[in-house]
Length: 245
Image (cartoon, rainbow, N blue to C red; front, side):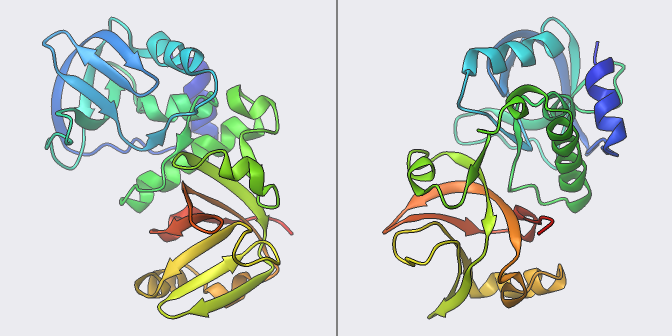
């Protein structure tokens, strides 16, 4: 069932993200691109991925093709529900080694999330996403899935949504306790990444001290906020990826 997807994930070195078992059940229905309902009524939200806003019905169908009617195991650090009462977990179809999340990423049906605290799991999901991108699967079949940092209008249109943005850092400046990675010459209107002072040690430990990023091409993922211009706040070093100049 997951042969094509998991072979791509295998090629990317995807790890299982196999945390503690937090429950089992049979999938009764798929609600949306990252949510499903079990036969006992529990609602499950897939951890570690962010949905793609385009062609939502197609993304939902992709998840349904993998899990509908199957027995699954839920794995996570804990089983505490989110504020909507959903169980957030990595989902494993019975008999499969890889989580459903890795399959969706390798098929190009989702983005790897920016808030995965386990570094090994985060790296595995990013690798699965990269495999899908390299194979031009799903959303990667066209060039619109990742936004150009210079296309401020395209980024502004995604206010409040999760995005991947790529571009060259033109300047790095500090204002108070915040460091700005500026991708345009108009600091107030062009796209920028904001970095709080508390994030600096983890960036430096990852070999990505802000000043070292000047004139480098990077990819950043996160939720778009609109202030005077579009922004992504850096909350984890894993949100940044260095690209070939």
